Image (cartoon, rainbow, N blue to C red; front, side, top):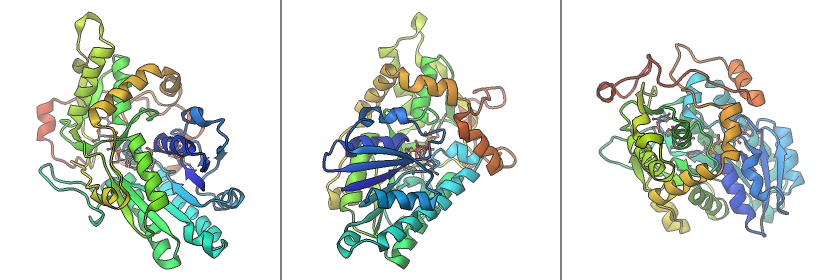
Length: 397
Ligand code: NAD
Ligand code: DAU
């Protein structure tokens, strides 16, 4: 079986490539543009595997995608290529519209043209798997509810709106043109090779550098955490056994407040890498201005994928977080160059009066230039937890 994984040099895509390549019956082509978030070092464990190959390309380039589909005789496309960071979508939505919406449209066109040229037998087995997020559902109140597959879409951020749009396109290509698609909507992933702009790796690396640990608002927002290797197993099942036209929710059943996550990381580091003078890592926590449009809570009901495809997470949050902290302690070769050359941990997504134009965002992204050099926790952003608790949910400035 021949897979095309797009975005395979990213956090989840690289876990999917590593997972699939462990099966000698699979051949995997990794198509990635290598934006600031793409990193071939994440593929080091499989870079010489007989069943793996890399192709630098843009999903917006329909012709290039079509050529690769034909050249590698693809059976299953797993589309993970995306701009993925909510805070960057606040600063510069243009790149999110380009890749997540226009890029999905282009790769759907390429897949449709390719699929139409297959034999009837190959056509029946072909799948276009679009990897999406629980953020398309908007958010939940703190006191209850879970996202099911039928939950109406109500995205809050430019990122989640662009993902919602792409999901709708994928469904439309199924309903209108008959392309055999499957979708999955997953909650927050964490684990090794996670780009350190996201909460968990950012906090680990800032703590190791003795820098402030930025907690948005009062740290009361809740996310449902899933270890990335559990997601990779779920994605293989959805891609190979999911029913065409259907979507599957994937989640870790591990809801935590952001403050709880940051404190757990601090406590693990106190044991594994104690600070000088007996100081505790929790002393580095800094409450900062909230994210605009910050969704309160996500929680996934994953009973459909459990029932229909037999999936369940293997890692619980405590063991997964300990594995993750240990991985960052042992793998500075991977994250050191990122912190030095690509992104130093500065605050992103404070919402300027007007979003930056697409061209400026593109300039900041290409060439892997260091981006975002404003200091964290400066006088304008620091607030007390009490002030933040009083702040309304949707901050607009
Ligand atoms: P990531 O930012 O780590 O990686 C994205 C990858 O896509 C990078 O390697 C980048 O170079 C590549 N890419 C970007 N634009 C491209 C383009 N135009 N053409 C080709 N490649 C391009 O993202 P991630 O966290 O690994 O997320 C992967 C997918 O999973 C995304 O679609 C995201 O929406 C979804 N998702 C992520 C999470 C999460 O917690 N990280 C949860 C649910 C769903
Ligand atoms: O739910 C799935 C989504 O999870 C994916 O679709 C996204 O691609 C992925 O980035 C992630 O989105 P979040 O916005 O939830 O992840 P992030 O790590 O940016 O933030 C997690 C929570 O922590 C969120 O409530 C904001 C908060 N936060 C984040 C950062 C970066 C902080 O408090 N401080 C921070 O410095």
